[in-house]
Image (cartoon, rainbow, N blue to C red; front, side, top):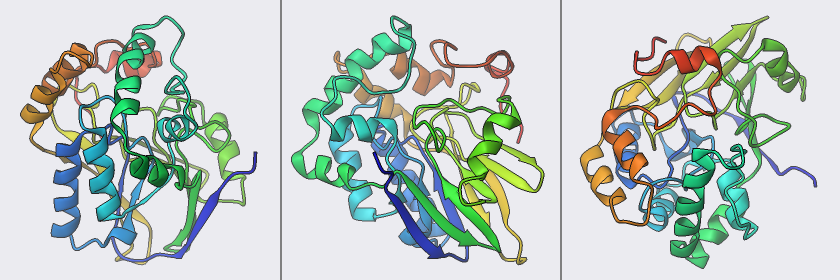
Length: 275
C-alpha cells in the first residue's frame, strides 16, 4: 500500500510538537492555550499521531483537534479506527496487561466516535515532511517502516539511521513510545516530543511536548512540561468502562507496567526525566 505523505513546504518561526493526545481533552485544551500564548499558529503545530486513546473523551478530543486544526499524521490508533479494525494495532504482546487494557479502551473509543470524527481521522497522512532552518524534516509515528515500532533513546542508532535515508532527511520527529527524548549523531537528529495524554512514567502528573525555534538561523529545540486539569481527567476515567489503572497513572505519573520498555528506560521509572 502506498504511503500518503503530505509536504508542508518551508516552515519558519516556532513550531509546537506533540503526540499521544489519547482522548485526553483536558491536556489538549491546555496545549492549545500554550500555542496561543506562544503565538504559534495551527499550521506550525504538529502532532505525531494517536489523537484517540486511553482516556474518556475521544469524540470531544477529535472535535477540538479538528476545530483547532494543527497538522497531524495518523498513529496506529487512527489507522485501526479508520479501517474498522478490532484492535488498536499498538503492537502490544498478546496476553500482556497492555493488550488486556486495550480490549477495554479501544472498543470504548470506537463506540463513541461519530462518522464525522472517523472521516477526519481517515484523512490524516502517514507522514509529514517540511523544510526548516536548512534541514529536511520528516514526521513519523513509530518509524517510517512500521507505524507501531517502539523506538526509544536506548534503541540502537543503526535502527534509527535507516529512517533518515528516506529522501535524505536530517531530522526525524517521532511518537508512539510515550517518552520524550532526543538523540543526535552524525549531524542527524531523532526527536520525540513525548505525549500529552499520559505522564511519562516519571512520577509527575505533568506531560511533555517540545518547541522548535529558528531564531538564530539554526534548528534549536527544547522539551517542555505541560500542566493541565489532571484531576478532571482522572475523574472521567473512573467511569467503570475504562481501565482503572490508567486513572491511577494520571495521578501518580507511574505506568502500571513496563512491558514495552527496554531495560534502560524501565530502570528510570519514577526518577524524573532529564533532557
